[in-house]
Length: 370
Ligand SMILES: Cc1ncc(COP(=O)(O)O)c(C=O)c1O
Image (cartoon, rainbow, N blue to C red; front, side, top):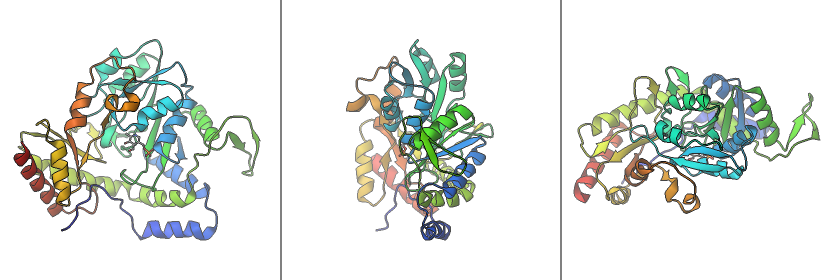
């Protein structure tokens, strides 16, 4: 039986050669290759600074620290997201305030975000989930209320609003390079920003709080810091992945259109929405089942047939670690998405025949289970 996996990196000879070159050089920590990776991502997104991190989670933490978010501050976070989004808020000692999401975009609901603001709100931390940009009104809401925006774009490198890349809109945006993301370095992340002061603080903090002098040596440490450097070994993969990022996005969009066509007309299935004004990059192709109570059975059944389905993501208020996090809006859309959403296999090793097999098996399972 051929297994159809959910996701998979797209790696070729170029990545192997680039890693070998770094290994052969004997210089394995963060250095010139990471600088090149940062420059490529920043220029692709269209921002002044790209700063590499060990993960998107460490980048989010440092973004919040650089903005001065800390104990006593509230940060508005969508309830429907991976826990890392709200973990970053708690790591810096602030409180995540959970708000509902939109059922079509799966992204933060602007009205819920607005009604959740208080005098303690310091920042909005929206998530452009699965490759879908957020509603731009979130940026307006933040500026009207003099709040910062840190965008969790773990899934959304290359996504666009009116031709401009996600990463150009928020004060700080953070991407992930985990293997399920659009491009990968194995593990890794990047913070992008236009703001020189935030960039300076982020660079200092990620390298032990020391500022290197002109010759590269650090002689003075004035600040608290950590080690969130991204090794040149991993950045070498990232540099090669960036050279083909647009081709990979085009392929994913083509495959998403194939799924849209195959799923068209099924009244129990909502496909991911994308309007003409945005470019959804389909890091995940996540559908919403209109029938309650069958999702897990459907996932288990297809897995037995060798087709790897997965849930979308989590409703944080239903997770033990976040159940006491404040929320001032209904979280019913988030809960519905958490219980009824299904991610379908999508990666560059998938053929159109595989996509047909997935949809046929899905339709069979939903009909049997409902
Ligand atoms: C929305 C979101 N934010 C943050 C993360 C964490 O990214 P990383 O694994 O690079 O820390 C993920 C990972 O899946 C994610 O989906």
